[in-house]
Length: 518
Image (cartoon, rainbow, N blue to C red; front, side, top):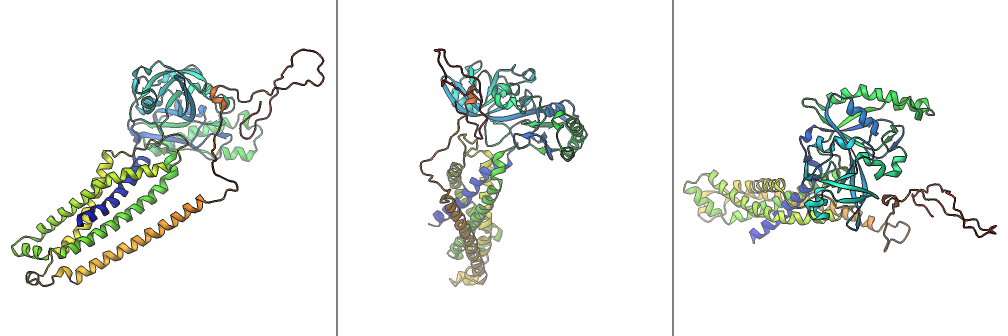
């Protein structure tokens, strides 16, 4: 009964910590599986921007080209743009995560191909001149069953035919941990993949449209601060040149001055640029603290059980000491027993951690795209579990072991109450009970408030009936339809001939939802 209670308590404590560490490791701690990830940085033009911006940490494509061709701190640079893509192959169409990437994307990251080839600088030569695609390893296995003959296969992406030239290597999911683009297309195919955006400012020539993430690899021996200081003069030269362009003709002088106060910032990118990290980092840190308290409660509980159990072993300990056993040897024996309990609890905790992670991930909104966070323990998770188990075994086993090896030999051997039930031992047990109650009350109050908040969110009245409602969107342009089709009209009120009606190309203004009626 003692072993069952101890292992069950420890499995919950260690399992919860292992489960949360599995998420923390993949979202917050793990480096990108690329060559020398510590050298990667993300460029960010900070300050008041004049123009359109397509998201966080974006630069215009001409600015990327200028920095790429005129810097002394990077050994290589690449750009990317994440977007949804509609892929049609073998009579089946599906919407997947995709990326437009420069030809230097794979070489700078040091990522090769599992099958075929990846993009090179030759794919960055001519707009519209690289109708190729590199699919991700996960997508290759799930969609094409790992068929090695996929190289050379024709597919249709956003209504445009492309040829698969390769499969990226296994284990590489991109620069956004938590997501895995299924397909990558050369950035030179921007107009074909995004005909609407390319007609406006999100193209290769406009400096007023920011739409690409720009990454650089620092040269050996160049620090982040040195690189940042080196880029500022050239960056401000670009700003001085841009403010003279025609787009600023009607800008107020104050707007021009604010624009010129921008500066180039460099962010460490060894862990990538993760939306998942920005959304859930605080929640994961809070959960880490909570499961730490759960483990402390379990340790206090097992320590109390061990002290109580030691009362039945008073004569054994007294006899060992009387026969000449050293106190250190007996403490070692008791710690080994505690460690065995902890390892058993840790083993059970691994199974519990997998179930907890699957349950937590099921609550996360994925927007139809599966997360790449794995619930299967790897070597890092197993090492963490082992470390926590050993630390836990020492934590809850050391105090009872020290208390058990301080009996009053004469009284204990005469079957009198030994010191294990004395004032010191009783004080330790009371302290452990107080700690258990205090921590449990803290967690109970926090859990109650959390459940109350979830209940309030669930039953919040939005002002309409929410039962049996779904939300969806339609984007015909991804299948080649024009963004603004003509409205067909026919004024037949004064028709006297049998000639067919003519339909002038009259277009309505774009609606706020991007949907048009024909």
